[in-house]
Amino acid sequence: MALFAIAMDEPKPTLVAGLKAACPTHYSFSDRTLVIRHTGGIRALIESCDLPDAERSGFVAVQINANYFGYSTGAFWDWLATAFREDAGG
Image: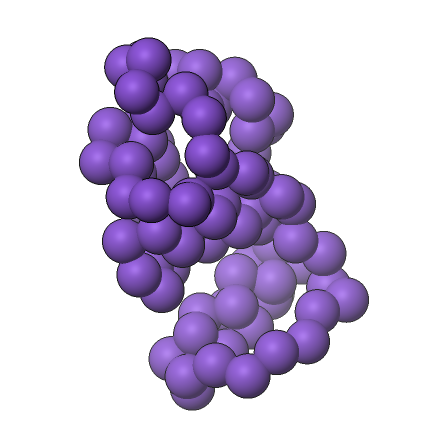
């Protein structure tokens, strides 16, 4: 399982709905930023969302590793710690 951050320059409802449906373990910061847990390639997952042409630009998906830093809510840090712990088998 891997963690991916998806950042969008504007809301992409079809993309977000497809990712949330395929990845029930996700964390939303806003309607333009999402972190998901997924097994497999991110490109295949995004292509499976069947995006309309209007949503085929203006976003990136980046894999997150255990080397991270930032300031966020306790809820996000708890979610992230749980995700890494579960991926490590514990």
